[in-house]
Length: 177
Picture 1 (cartoon, rainbow, N blue to C red):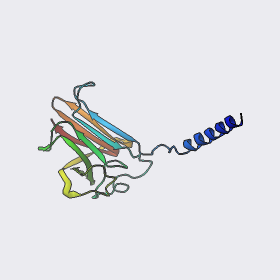
Picture 2 (picture 1 turned 180 degrees about the vertical axis):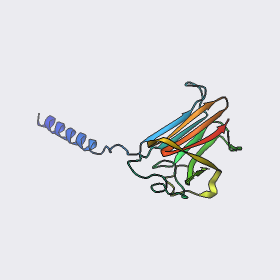
Picture 3 (picture 1 turned 30 degrees about the vertical axis):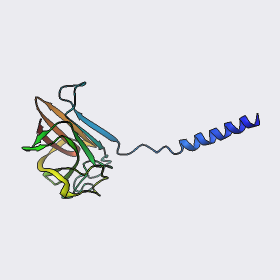
């Protein structure tokens, strides 16, 4: 009986010590956007994995995300694009494969960068010699404030749009496939 009591005490100790190791929820949760122009059950054209930072009453562009500096397009690990077929962006082909997405935000436009260096954290390992495609897109100001950074796809008939949105800024990237 004493052995049973000892086992119960030890098990409850290990159980409570395990529970104490569970981390709190991430303030910039991981999310993904999938582009399936032909609906559920069909093969996707692209998938983006990213983290969603929150505005939290902060000034975002020009402050938290400085103008003219490389940005990871989200939070935590850099945003990753998985292409399942070739696409055309700004008249240039981006081949099937995996890429990290970076941006250089400015007041009226963003430079969008697709880079072949994968699994990077933030911009610490950014290497411009691994840029595969770069282009400039204008920004649009949204009427509503967007609290959490978000990425979304839309489109059909061999063309699509990729939306990057946060605070009062929206960036649309047109592509065809």
